[in-house]
Every structure is written in structure tokens, then in C-alpha cells.
Length: 169
Image (cartoon, rainbow, N blue to C red; front, top):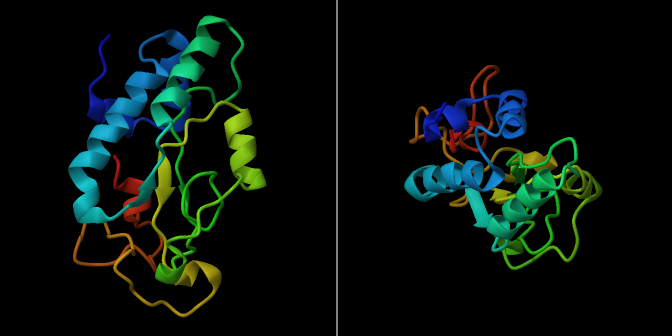
């Protein structure tokens, strides 16, 4: 069974892990599906603040571990986190444009645990300063609502997805 990019991106994490385990897709293929959506839609949605230079190498390493049967619980799964968590090599702005030049030297503990479980980190998702408890203020780096791109992705009513949650779908 061949899976389309839309099917791959639309699958829940547990479904994607099943497809990886069954050999229906490899991590490199899953990453390519997300990278194509990011390239196509990020200019409009501003979901990703920065992309990881080593994402393809992360996916290749995951595929090698899978071939060697030494995988982690999340091996090959593509996971992106908001930029209020440090991801080594990526900016951690917490939604503050003045912090755009602050590049994390090491992963936050939550990110390190995701990586240790085999997750592939394609980049950091844009955030607004409301994530650090400040009143909502829009900035040019705020993500866009995927269904209504004229609106910022946060604050968000219950049940609605921000660009970060659905922008790469």
C-alpha cells in the first residue's frame, strides 16, 4: 500500500508509528512529506520559525536503527515543538522577536527525551509572547490560523488548531 503525503501527514502519531513499523514508510519519507508541506505553506502560515539543518540526517539515522532493530519508542516520528523549548541549534524566542538571535546550545530536557526515543525534529514552531504569560500581542513571527490565515494562531478557542498544530498537515 502506497501512502500519499496527505495520508502520511494526516495520520495520528500512533498510525504513523504503525506505518513505520510495518515498513509502509520510512522516516526519511515521512520527513519529506512534512518538508514538502512546510515549503508549500510556511510562507502563508508562519508555523515554523526555523528549520533544522540536520533533519534529513536524523531521519536517516532513525531508518538505520530500524534496519538494525534497535529502535526507540518514537523512532522515525516527526515531531516539532514550539520555540519556548530549547532545541539545540535553533532559536528559542518564546515569541519575542528581540530573542531571534538566541540559538539554543543544548536541548531542553523534554526535547532530549523525545530525541532519545528516536523522534526526528524538523524545526521549531513559531510562538507568541502569550506563551510566557504576557497578554496576547501579535508579532510578525506569530503563527497563522490554518483555516483562517488572516488570524493569528493564538489565543485559540477550544477545538481550533493553530498553524503549528495543523499547518503542516
